[in-house]
Structure formats: C-alpha cells, structure tokens
Image 1 (spheres, rainbow, N blue to C red):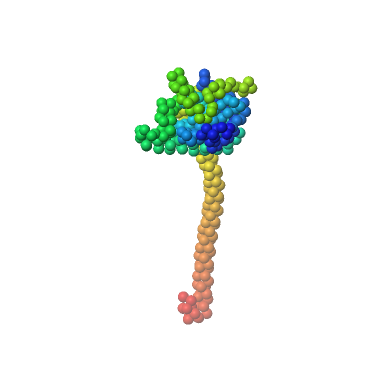
Image 2 (image 1 turned 90 degrees about the vertical axis):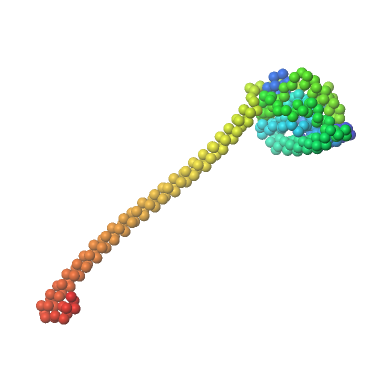
Length: 311
C-alpha cells in the first residue's frame, strides 16, 4: 500500500498476493473477477478507531475495502481458494492464492485479527454506556454491525475456473439495508482514502467465465462434508481390517499346520508306546518261559536248591 495510509492512521500489518473475486450481485451464484491478475491484499490497523480492515487496490481501483467484525468468518473451501461475507459492503469477497501455504497464512492472520476485534469489542461493551465511549464501541454498536452478527443464509458457491472451489455464505440485503450499508461503508473509507467512487463494479474477463452452480444450504454442505469424512474414515478402517484379516489368516494357517504336526507326532508316540508295551510283554513271557524251562532242567539234574532260588 501507499505511505499515505500510514499518515492517515492506518498501518499495514500483513500483505499477501491473491486474485480477487466478487460475488455476482444479480445471481448470487457465480463469481466476477475483480482483479486482472494477482494483487496485494493487506490487513490494515486504524489506530484512531481501533479497527482492522482488509484492503486491496489494483491501479486506482479499490477491489477490497472490508472492515473486519467479530462475526465475520473466512471459509477455506479448497486448497487455494477461500472467501468471506461482508454485510457492510453487501458482497462476498473471494481470494484465489498460488498455493495452499499462502492461503493458510492468510487464514491465520484473519483469525488473529478477528480475535483482536472481538476482544476490543468485548472490552468496549464491558465499559457500559459511559459518555467517553471508545471508538470501538461506537463503530461496533451500529445497526450494520448488529446485522453483521446475524447468521448469513446465502447460497454456497463454486470458485471461478482458475482457482480451487470454495463455499461460503453470500449476503442478501434489502434496498434499505443496502443504502445504509453503503453510507456506513463510505464513512469507514474516509480514513483509508479509498472512496466508493473508486470501486466501480468489475466485470469478468472475456477469457474467464465463472460457472454458476446450484445453490445449497450451509447445513447441507456441513452434512455432506461430515459424510465424506466418515466415509474416508470407514474406508481407512476397512483397509486396516483387511490387512489384519490377512495377517490373522496366515497365523491361523500356521497354527493349523503346527497342530497337525503335533497331532501326528502324538499319534506316532502313542503307537510307539503301544509297540513298546507289546514288546515288553513279549519279553516278560519269553523270560518266564525260559525260567520255567531252566527249573525243569535243574530239577531233572537234582539241583533242588537252584530250582528253589529260581522260584
């Protein structure tokens, strides 16, 4: 940004490059390219009002001039694309980054600035209705800010062709709200030096034709995301179970083989024991027969004492 911003009370605290898009104000279902190429997108801090803004300028045109409120949410809907809704500006801004890392840096800074805004707003609210209210109190107590805190029921969008897709709410304001939003937005731009007249509607490039998509509710998108997550988790669990099942099959086959070998060895041992018993019985019978024959021979020879001993 220019040094003029610093002299007017706003200081850049973070800058990145991204392709800027606006929601089509007529259909609310497609994107309009707001910048011809990737431009600098910066977070500014207005020290006089304790406000944070996101500002981007292409040439002399302000393609983004968004005052951050505690109710704003930046939605990352793909690896390189994200968007947020600005009730004050009555539009939805989309940013296409060159890499997911750049997008993640922007999201971190957005969350950091949003939290700082929330804390400042809470501090101002806790001070009550004292006459010496801080600028944060007056800036965040407007009807526009109150409307910004309400949930945004706008349709979800697919991103333009050159960026990863995204989904986030797009605001739909009535004519009275739009006029009030524009007036408040003009007042907030006085510090940054960016007048509304410097931000004419940008039409899409001839070679870039954002494709409209069917509208969906945030709840449906959240449910679909949850189902996809559960599906992926179940697939992973199934893959692990299949791998474990194969391992268990191998172990079972090994146990069966060992069991068969042990059973065969046991049967063989049992057969050997039976054979040894049969042979022992045969040897005993043979021994007894030989003893009887020897006694008979000794008796025939008159060896009575020897016969008695053998008996």
